[in-house]
Image (cartoon, rainbow, N blue to C red; front, side):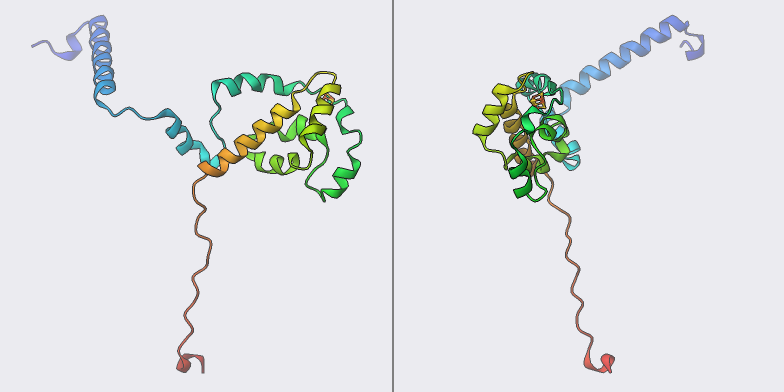
Length: 170
Ligand code: SF4
């Protein structure tokens, strides 16, 4: 039998490549197919990152059109004051709060302060036509999804100590 070191390098490379291909094919055939979405949730739910569907990904491209002109914040002073810190105006929502999925629960609380019809009016006046209602819907949906896919919180309750027997307390 030909010793492995005596095999010409090209043949050795070819044999290794063939072995890798055969092994990959067999692994694909015989290993259980894993659900990519479930795997994604398993890996990223704790980081508060929900999966994004292809149509949602297409919408995301429109979400970054805000040029920070501040027009949509006009007339929001009363709502900002009444929100007691929950809401800082429409522009911050369009510029920042809706960009980071892990923070969507906070953004959802903020969006809840502005009625849908107000967003519709501001959307019509926005110079770059930022789709404000679409963004609000996306944030709400993803925040709800996050609540559903999050792993259960770790047990927080401290164990109650048993009262010491009377003799130890004295
Ligand atoms: S009006 Fe439009 S472009 Fe201007 S700050 Fe608001 S969202 Fe941004």
